[in-house]
Image 1 (tube, helix red, strand yellow):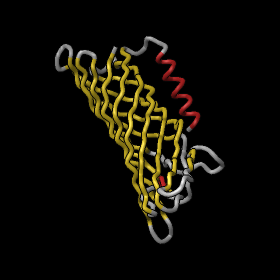
Image 2: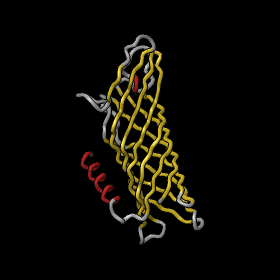
Image 3: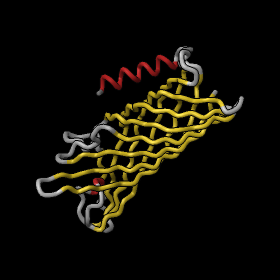
Image 4: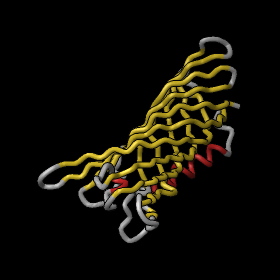
Length: 222
């Protein structure tokens, strides 16, 4: 997975340095995500969910496919920032506080670098307006993933780097599938999309984790 990610990043940067793509666009938007963790034992299966909110920012290049009118390809580089706060009254409510006892709040943050590679199809409604749809894989590199536990009583808060240590709680590399629709009016783009992770986020024994994301963004095509 690491070699694949490095190859794709190098290819994306190489394309960005050439004139092969027809159009550069930059954008930012809101992310609403649901992270689900499943714990299986011999006797039962427990499912925990965590709601996250945040934003993304980045850029992409679009290249038309000359052989098919309206068909295109694009590749981009985006940074995602996600956050969540959850309060527990001594009962586990998600993977965020699975190792914590008593009442308190888990403050969670996740920062990742994402490389989407999409096939696109669009058509013009008027001279300055077009609509389009896209779909493709997203290769993800986790940059930071932390969980800070703040108990209701006392000052014994603790922070965990979920990528670090001899037994990290999270996988740094992941693969998602994404898709969405959008419209462009005089260079201004509005995009609505969804992403679903395909690989297990978690490394803890008997746990599997996945994430679904809804994204709404705006951008400008130069």
